[in-house]
Amino acid sequence: MESKRASDLMIPLSEYPHMPYWFTLRQAMATLRSSRIEVDGKVSLPRAFLVFNEAYELLGVVRRRDILRGLEPQFLEQKRQSYPRKLFHVKADPDLLELGNGKVAGRIKDRAERPVGDVMQPIKVTLQQDDHLMKIIYEMVENDLSMIPVLEDGSVLGVVRSVDVL
Image (cartoon, rainbow, N blue to C red; front, side, top):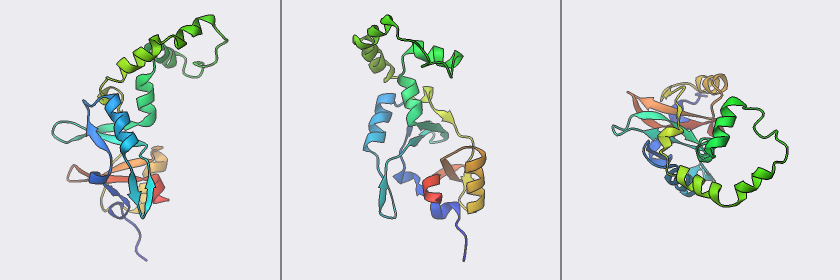
């Protein structure tokens, strides 16, 4: 029995969501909401998309949680950076009523116009199309990744997701 390679497991780039770095978080949310990935008759929703520059060179990846972080109000973003584990360990504060008066919703709408390049994560690891299944598993576990781009001569062919490896 021949073992699987990255090319056997990957989703072609044409079937995986991707966009340029200047697209807004609003456009990214719409893309994720409308995207469907079908593998062997099973449909799933993407958890991330790839980000490219003008020359179609891979720049990074944006996950759903990156979009959410990009939308959070600036005062929360600053607290998260300095108190990552204590952010929501707060007692009831009467000033929290201000969150419900519409100001925050307006700010979130404004932040949704930020480019995805502001929130994207760098690509930690890539694969070659002939990389063996064991290398794919190793890289996913070692680097805590659920998706890895597959390249050939520097160009992205597609992605391998952990769900497809399993």
